[in-house]
Length: 574
Image 1: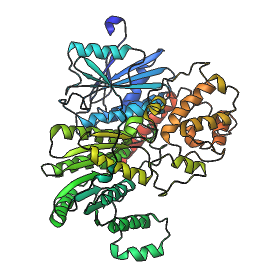
Image 2 (image 1 turned 90 degrees about the vertical axis):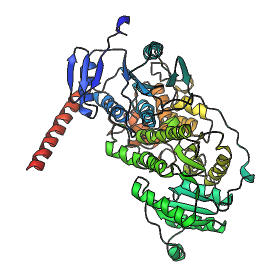
Image 3 (image 1 turned 60 degrees about the vertical axis):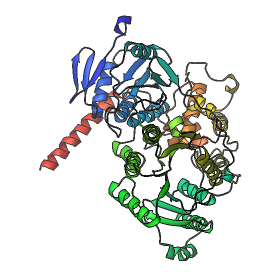
């Protein structure tokens, strides 16, 4: 690249921050402050586009400092330094997808996808791409592979997600799958099915699908204790019908009425000792386990505080405990056992990302990769990953009327999800990865993942020039979500608008008004009237000068952080 006249700065891992030569730096990948220092020094001169190549793949089983967390630190730094130029971030990892069938897979590298998706969606001047290379060491490639990499690095618009195998490039594509009617499939009456996270919405839906197919014994687990069966009738009489525990009790009673024996256990899937005890107890009490459905995990509800700027390592680890560590523990426990299948419930966020979903997407992408690795390494148990779209567990039947109900009608309802789960058992031996999307996937990819953002003057749609901001917001909401009756004072999130919806709408509105809009605005002004007021400069507290250079503030913040840390050490030592 230097031979072609490009200036190239290199950064290597080290114990501290240092400038080794003019264009060579060393940083501690665990230290967020080092990324800020680095970018403040490197981004001093104006460039049309800053190109960054990240090749610090994860070398551990869990996401580590060189992989996902390094990208997270970079994303935070981009948001803090207030740079206005375009940044092209290309992430290179070792293989985490089985394409040829003989790759050495590292599922922890799949976690980088979470950062690649969400950094671009949350930071308006950053474009991201991911290149996945076969081989264990991303620093050692032959000449042909290096030429392919260089070609991607220097092109103006690199492929968002690319895999390189030998001298060939592979791009991601999705094929619609026709599923046969599942009515004829019957489960073994003496089969024992374990559903980890079985007391959650998807877990209970899977339990009902199995019971309707004739499954004899269902083991449902949850993180917290559940009322004993002897207290159910009394509890049903005391608490209202919409009580969440009562809803679960009624669902379990339905399973029993279908002829299934249902047993409840409390376990934290990331606790290996208790998980071992659980499976030993199940086999001793109920017999051989036929299959496992993995539906454990947490639900992200506060998207704003889970955004790149707000999320902490502790918040990420909480997400990884259930979805990553728990799955690793499960595999160790069932390794060598004659278990027919393991269905892993993942999320469509692995394909679409979403604001505030960096860690969530990373964890789910790990699970998808882990499933492929399992099928590659053994053939005793058939593994399948299912990337589910959003569900609606608020009611068993669809009901329109309000904008919120109109939006919820577009989500997966339990009856629909149950039918899909039944069909999945028929195709489990044919495929290992299914994406369940409630609408056509390609338009969603075009809007939320593959869109090229053009914020140049005059790029807005001609037909919308005469619209007021409120009218523009209503139209973009209708186009993105199908909500035709969104009220000016109706909360976006109460109406079912998701963080993924916001990505496409925000880009489109930016093009129309020809100025950047902070993603956080949608959370701070969560109605059409309030957001329009903010964008028009009529909101008194509107922060209309967000785009200024925040280097001085960052420096002061870092100084204060160091002072607090030193104070903490003094207190600890004193």
